[in-house]
Image 1 (cartoon, rainbow, N blue to C red):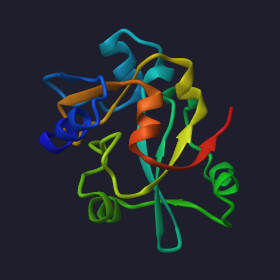
Image 2 (image 1 turned 135 degrees about the vertical axis):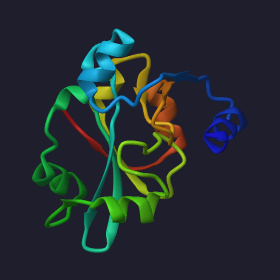
Image 3 (image 1 turned 120 degrees about the vertical axis):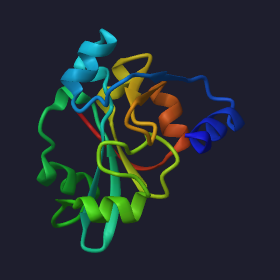
Image 4 (image 1 turned 90 degrees about the horizontal axis):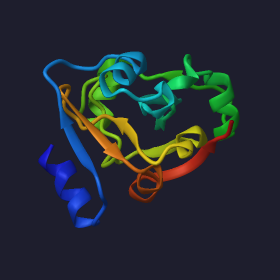
Length: 149
């Protein structure tokens, strides 16, 4: 988490890291814990097309992620979820602990996140959450596409 904190401080990005005793495993759990709308939660998924991997930062109120729709956003034939071994290999983090910033992957960002002044997502550690402005997420990541409404 020091790497995350250092990156945010170096870039002079306002943020808050919130500690909690147990991991938050879903958008619904996060919304309840923080007293926010589920759409304000920002899970990160790792998807792949062939050997290429992408991080998808999306709004928790989307529910199930439509991989066919995301494939169209990227202009590729097919996307699939990366398995847990691949996620660990390409990110250095376990599924459920992927940080919102600091990944060396191209990012697809959900436009729904911009409805909120702050969103809540991963830090790289299961028992903490990053609160950050969606515009700053865009600045700190290599965003290659936006997932529209």
